[in-house]
Image (cartoon, rainbow, N blue to C red; front, side):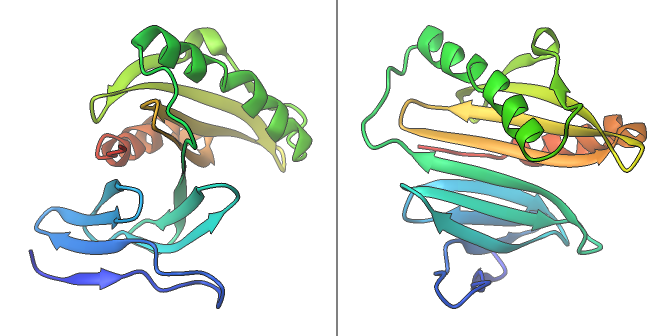
Amino acid sequence: MLFIEKTTAARANETNIFTRVDHEDGQEYLDEETGVSLTLPLGWRLPTAVRWGNQETTAYFNDRESKPFGALYFRIFEEPLDPSLDATRQRLREEVGPKATQRIGEGLSDYRIDAQACRERTIGGRPALSCVGEYTQDGQPMVEYLTWVDSGIAFAQFFGRNPAANAVPFITQFDVIIETLKIP
């Protein structure tokens, strides 16, 4: 362990949410209040994290060039949900349609997710689902990579956008970060 730091609040009414611990291979960011953590590659940063809503947090991270790369949204459920694999996988599948509807409502009129192409997986021992949203922005084909993780106690969603031409390297790089997630 080389260095420990609290993230700096982006606005005066925000609190320092994550503790950063530097390791040889990257920086681990831990929300001590919720027990949620992720590790970013060396040189990456988590400059902004915002608590909002009902036990909800969104954290934005940047790549080595300080360009926005993606975000992690998470919430702790008020009451634990059914933690069985079947129930959890069903909750994850139910996220897909509303996410597409949300993006269309945000102005991405041709946004779509092929639910049949989504991939069930396990992240940090928890059931997860990864999907790719496709849309056009300023005439350019784009993708949004989404991964949802659910433990029955906590829920997390990663999301990041990139030109479709770079989808494979973007998703590969994003998965390196996603695989480090730990939720209660």
